[in-house]
Amino acid sequence: MSFDKFKDECGVFGIFGHPEAANMTYLGLYALQHRGQESAGIAASDGQVIRLSRNMGYVADVFDAETLAGLPGSMAIGHVRYSTAGQSSVANAQPFLIDCAHGQMSICHNGNLVNATELRDALVRQGSIFQSSTDTEVILHLYARSRAATVEEAVVDAVSQVQGAFSLAMMTRDRMIAVRDPHGFRPLALGRLGDAYVVCSETCAMDLIGASYVRDIEPGEILIITEGGVRSVKPFAPAHVSQCVFEHVYFSRPDSYVFGRSVNEVRTNLGRILAREQYVPADVVVPVPDSGVCAAMGYADEARIPLRMGLIRNHYVGRTFIQPQSAIRHFGVKVKLNPVKSILDGKRVILVDDSIVRGTTSRKIVKMVRAAGATEVHVRISCPPTISPCFYGVDTPRRSELIAATHTLEEITTYLDADSVGYLSLDGLLSAVGSERESYCTSCYTGHYPVSFPHDEATYLQLALKLDKGEVVVK
Ligand code: SF4
Image (cartoon, rainbow, N blue to C red; front, side):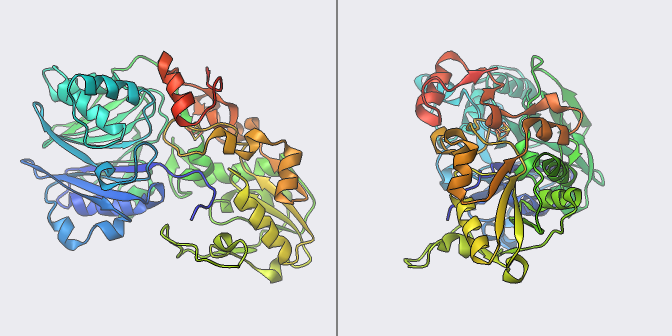
């Protein structure tokens, strides 16, 4: 059942130097489940051999005590996936594991490579045989073919040839390697658990296992973790840092620190600034749960209007929910959200959400709130209008399906049947993330893309992915 949201991308986790590495990774992935629900996997090394277990489904369904017992060793990496590149099948589930001239190598990837198709075509012409349809496998092929003398040099050789978004956790039999692309699109944090080292997409994974956050892995940094300690190398040419601002708006958990900032704090700020920019008199502020809650709290606080949970979410609706043949209108939304009549009846309502993608769900929610007796419904969105697709690891619809790309504010208001619709400004969004506003990617709000694609990659993006001719603008 589509809920008309951008889809989360992937989550990566790795731990080095812990006697229960696979168990810790299982817990870490559990905390990162919101970043991908299609497949999960863990690779673990006992110093001699890397073993792998991966399958389709939630972390809790993929692993049990027996599977985890089959993954011995003090080092492990793990992955939860939502397919942003490549199809949804177990062949595409990560980690990947290969054995090549450099020995065994396992990899987990969060992000999308923008030149994967070109590289893959060239590799296939040279005789490479691919096992999956993902961009991640390209990195492994480049690594395996590298003539560099050492593992580290071969990793540098491989990742220097790919472009786009990549936060990677890699592992040989005796070392862990964490890589963040020079633009730093996707997060990757370093932590400690006793003597063990942890790398993960979000700090909420560290909280669950009792690890402490040390720092972010920097854009363009490669960390090599061995028995001898941690070494950092920065082999990439300097690049404009473009951290995904949507991690703060929607993807990351509010209890995480991402890009060095509290997600809850940023998200609450978004709501405060939204209230200043898009104030409207009303009786209650109602969040669209769960992702609109922090922004709604900020809005209510700033506007001095009471916050009420006027929509209740059913948390037990899985991704496999099949909409039955039914005459009930808007069944898909109703099974997930239910209005609280005693809160909404006779009230002027400000409905706060984090984004509008196609508008279909927002329209149903407005209708639901009106049916519960609201006299006015004002929709407030804690980010600017989404007008362009993402190519850096977030699953977005085609540009022509994004309501804000094809409709004016007035038309959106009419379509949603709202009394008013108000978005946060780009300036408001950037001021909420603090003083490093230049270091964020905002492409889905501006249509300006920070990574310049190779010439025919732009054609690829236009034709094969999400854009129509002439829509790619390179910064
Ligand atoms: S285009 Fe949007 S979703 Fe994609 S990386 Fe940039 S800010 Fe994030």
